[in-house]
Image (cartoon, rainbow, N blue to C red):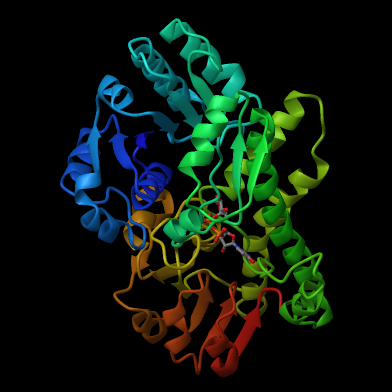
Length: 427
Ligand code: UDX
């Protein structure tokens, strides 16, 4: 099939190249001329493991443009993969979804064949039919589900393993209304061997939020129990090993510690809280999930102060700035609130991260420009007696922590075994 992808960011690139790998031809669209050029030169505009190799291997199967007409007229299915950032109040900003729908709608007006538009961007329930559909209809002069297809197909990609997730998903969710669209999507995804859940459109939108809210809840639950365990002298990881063996619970995604960051969990939980309030529901549990998550960095500082009561003028080494290992992404990283607090208390901070130092400095200039950066993790241990571990990069397992005070938010076993003083956040 011929697929067009609107928005050549993270989700767009993985989805598009995933479809290329499945044997389709793909046109990427982006308003950013630099991204278009990079893709046309076979280079990846975002970093993800295996992406550039795939782009090299399938060079003749994709191209990029900034012209909507060209993308729509030369494809059968269009995926909207633009960002849905958070507004100040936690609700999602639909600006990019709206402008993409408008341009797609205009081009659809000139299209003779049946065309399917699929929303892949994470949008709160009701958006595809309440926002995207009227814009497409108005701009094209055509009717959704009759003259053109419209569907919602959420993504569940994890950074670092996103291509694998695309090709081997736990499930594929297809939110559809008309048979023709359903057939097109089922055909497109037919090479992938995974359960396909076919629902109406707003259920598909909700499945994405409910999935992420559940995983975030599981982490905050692990952290709340973990905090209680810490006070009682119990290792919460051992507790969750025992708990996770209950097949109704599962051992995955049960690591207590510094909490969740990244581009999805904080944003999605806040957006569904906002939507709940909008419809007159008080999301008590979801609000607590965010609150527990925001407290974990403070807990880490409290533990630190047990051993170093006065932070003013103290040099503190920080290992890890990325929101999780194997990425340079610092969005909502728990390292930010920790380091901000250290600076507020007058500490001197030296940090190291294998991939995320540049991004940290750029995204959080208020903090990022006031700290020193080390060339290697070893330099942190040479220069600081007190070390905080904020991201579990595998290479932190190979350091010498003897004679150090280590406060660990992620559990690096080597530090636990060898540090002079060691405190784990929830163990
Ligand atoms: C997540 C979802 O997994 C994915 O399905 C969704 O589409 C996007 O959001 P991602 O943000 O890439 O993916 O990272 P993930 O590996 O899920 O981790 C998210 C955060 O939770 C990280 O900060 C991680 O450190 C934290 N985490 C994860 C825990 O604290 N404990 C765990 O047990 C698992």
